[in-house]
Image (tube, rainbow over all chains, first blue to last red; front, side, top):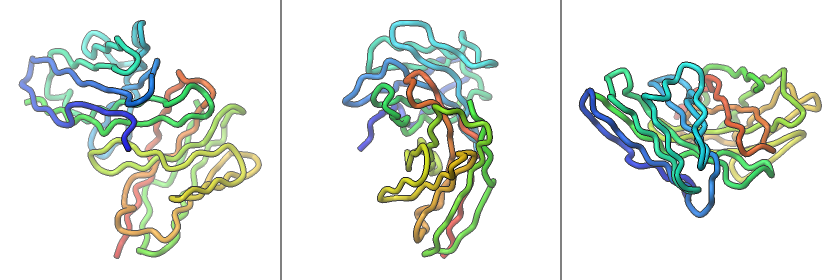
Length: 117
Length: 112
């Protein structure tokens, strides 16, 4: 069964509004979660690393004021796309590693399809 | 983070064995090799992971030569439902803070 849950799976919003995406680790604690973005026919691009209780680490070129990440608990990280524009329309995917070290693979949520009109 | 190179696409008929090779020439000592499968509009799904030699599970086998500079994912007797993008990733699995960087992946098309 799924070990990482993402919500909503699909959202449509108007340009200029903000959208929040939730990522939950199920039955395990994740001090670190990762957020990816994927455009059609392209690979996943790492956006940021979400750290529980501290600031997220953003990849080069990703605006931290536009993509707000909050990791307030050990099982929940949220990504808020602020003042969304049509170019932010994409597939957003979160992931977490179940187990610390011990060669634990990353588990991914089922993604959130964001469409900005 | 080690960079990976895979074929962009592959075609196969149903029932055939499919082997997808990935190159990772600058793999580090602590790096593991992990393969994921992704269907359209879904998150990647873990398939298999290995460090050296051969690993087999109920879904696939992973072959890693002694120099670890490449790896081959083997899918036995593929079906139409195996049509997906397959990603080979290399990373340090001993650190929980290390993300995985995705390459372009291999788009496998299974034909009836």
